[in-house]
Image (tube, rainbow, N blue to C red; front, side, top):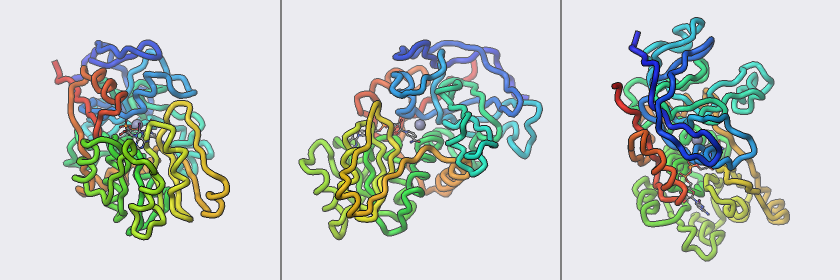
Length: 355
Ligand code: 8ID
Ligand code: ZN
């Protein structure tokens, strides 16, 4: 058995609004159905910042250890957890959906994210901004052998979520998709999944760094929302026939594009709503939406099968989104940059080495 310490480093908030405090806290013991994961790396999602700021109508637990893109190794498990569910020494991911009941009507239909009594990592239970995190053995993502744990960590929320959103949109190879917020964590992975699915990518975001990152990843067009005087015109013009993209994936953290997308999506096209800006509303003109038969659909993370599929794309070498690695103690700097919209791609936190 690995040597498990009784104390560990973690980033903790005591109250809504923060600050996040880097300190030592006890290591929890896994209960029935649970595993203890020695986290090696964790991506930082904008959801973690929403949690600190109390942006959303559901309160978080407090004190709270954030994080839900944790990649690590199983070091202990509840007495009832067997090898066919989760092995000691296995590489796993601690996702946003830490646990679901698996028996409510939604879980029964594989809509696990809609579970009536979910546990959410880094929100209603402690997450991956600590060296040892607890997760449900049945819900951890199984990371294929040989996959680097730093680069894969953002897939555990950002990758799974955008992969699911693209599937929900119903787009087919050869069609076009506009990704709004393309330079951020979800957006950069959405560009990669869209490319891997054979789609044409119109990346929408702002600034030279996000533009050159998107171009390096092979986007077909980049539109700078801060420079465009007419987004609808520019997005339509970026498609071959000028009719607009078949799907729009909204992953921005600003309400405005949630009120524009229905105007530039193609007739019969689909707007997929994923980003969660505080107090925001979706808006669409009734007349144009009806005459274009526009579909507007929200999408929320993914189930266990979506997670396995998203990881399989990664394991096959199809997904490479830029990321920067910093130490766990540097989380406040990452939040600062994220708040200012200055992150191209994702930041990944490296856990401290054992003492
Ligand atoms: O399951 C879900 N629905 C789910 C899962 C995970 C995350 C939803 N989310 C939510 C997060 O809570 C957050 O609200 O998706 C949103 C995006 O998360 P992220 O990718 O982690 O955020 P980021 O890295 O800060 O990227 C946001 C990007 O949006 C751009 C910014 O420049 C940034 O690159 N952006 C903004 I703000 N306004 C824009 C605009 N008007 C815009 N891009 C295009 N047009
Ligand atoms: Zn997330």
